[in-house]
Length: 183
Image (cartoon, rainbow, N blue to C red):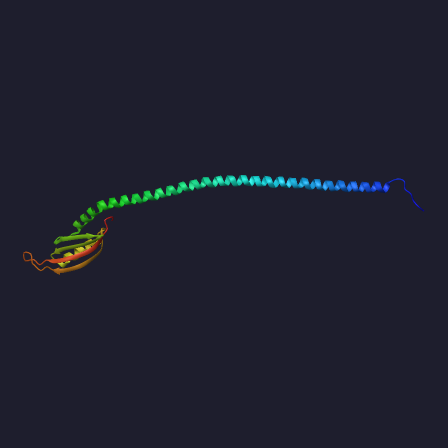
């Protein structure tokens, strides 16, 4: 038996399936485009936010660099002022130090001891003089060692003088020491 279908049911069904498939495909493409556009918008807004953040941080960094430069200049000025203050203090000590050291020396000299020569060079002092006895020389050295101005006191020599003065034998001596005027 031969069938003849006068109604185009199969073609209508095929057309409906094709239409459905086209609609589904179009919807997929539309959703893909919308999703891609949303993703692109989010990424571009994130990039714009990050660009603004970078710009803000760069400005903040340049301000901090200026502040650091000012701080470094102030540190240099502070160091220079401290150096100048130290120089001024050293000059004050150098101005009054020798006077005080000589005054201290004058009070340290015991009776029967005379200084005949004092030589100072680069903080080193050589004292030459005469005394009645060796004990007087020893007492003078001990007094110098107790002084805050004189350090490293050593005896160069102590000997009997070649000539007598009014029948008294004198002893010549040489004492070497370091002097600190800023003490």
